[in-house]
Length: 88
Image 1: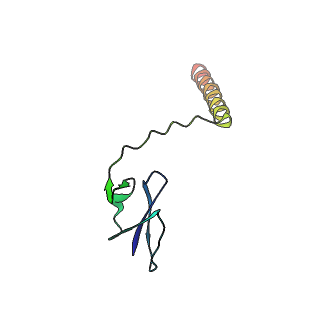
Image 2 (image 1 turned 60 degrees about the horizontal axis):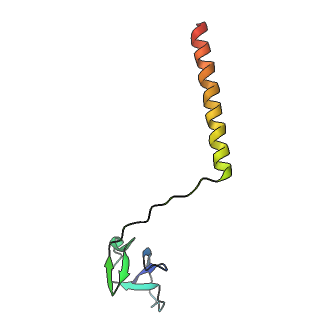
Image 3 (image 1 turned 180 degrees about the horizontal axis):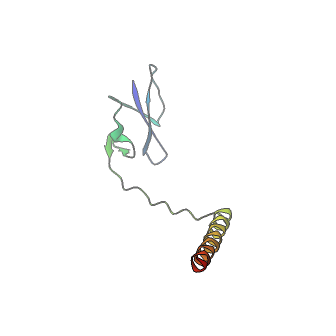
């Protein structure tokens, strides 16, 4: 038996093959391991296309600090390289 697992918005996010029957509202029995249902919404007994929601995660404080450090290091390396070229 093949199942598509759906989230709280009825969007399929996983597929499962098992010998056991599963009776859960979040597990939809399907005919085969059809990966086309991944990311689709199960509505009124049919799989429909949905537009994915854009992900707009804010960077963490640590990510911002790491980016600033990398930029500073790049600036230092650029200055050093330009001085080396000048003295060659």
